[in-house]
Image 1 (cartoon, helix red, strand yellow):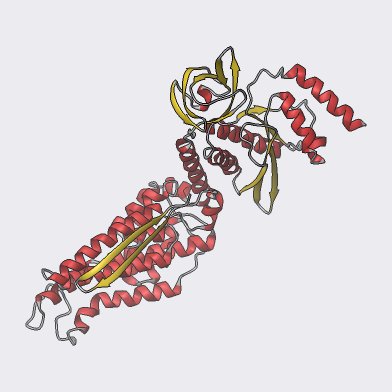
Image 2: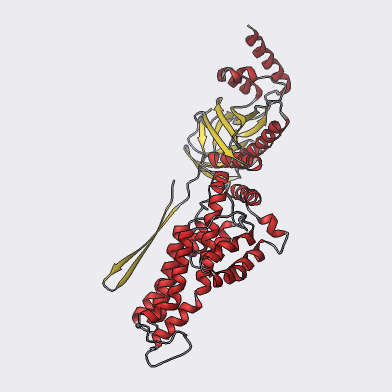
Length: 479
């Protein structure tokens, strides 16, 4: 009885508060506050960004439910039937419930969307979004709404008055004066208001559902949100703030890679990179022993490989030519000696990547991870992949490019050398592109930026043929 009285009072207040002057296809946002200041402030920011997501997707106009409408009783009992009636009398054709929880250092936002008779006739759905940073949680809520409703065509209801067809969609929904393809044929929009338009043409009857071949462009909105999420995550999980107090993240990273690390590896190849990590703010790091041993071995090969293939008969120094040293041997020596700094740089990025994974940290300049990774890959073989946390891929690119480079110089001027040089250029271009497009593998980053949108898969293969090498490059896109 009490519940019934509450329901009747709600409808009475709604008639006063909201005279149903709004159009159809709106959604009432209902944040479930609990009275705790921090909780409610975070939830309020989530409500704001969800509302922005609805504005960006231009399908359901967001309405804020007045707090004086006490609907907690219906929500608690999950009486969504009564809740739908309240929403429809308020002027909303859909409901969006927002609930915030916190557990084990992770915030979760539960978004429940309930259809109460909109033109879109979508199924009720629920989505749980998680993040460790409250600022990212609200951004991800807005992004989810924008991504979800940007995939829906514009739908409207027609109304005929005196031979004139009116639809409940207008400028706010992205309509302009002109012709559009619909499920009822070609129609022409003759005049447009903010939420209503007049149309002619098409095989349309009164109260028909008119589906326009029109989608909302939310790409810039989502791009801006992703940028903010990256900035928030990098600011919290990297040592960028500490480095900016010195010469800045970019300068400090260059000094660490090209000066500190090089000197340390000159004294202790491989292990020197581990000792150099402290300069970039990694305290109490752990050495990747296998990586250090690999670099120490490769460093020895830089010096000894040309001697070994000539039974140690040629001079150790590249600039000294003797009777046993052919031109190709001297070219290989010059190449291997010149690329020692690159090997030391690979060693450094491997140790950094290993410890970023271990300590749940992010590299410097991670507010722009794609651009930074691509630039690093230009100068350091496999560097961009190490930077994004893909150590196996980084080692693969480094060893492949070093081998192809050595083979190119050893066979310089010959057909084999030209083929190797071509393969090296293609491989380098592929590495730079892959470094840019791959999503970083660090768990803290993936958790913060997680989205329902599937990234394209990139594949690359080399196939031997009789007259050379066939190169296959593919991109798989999800729809």
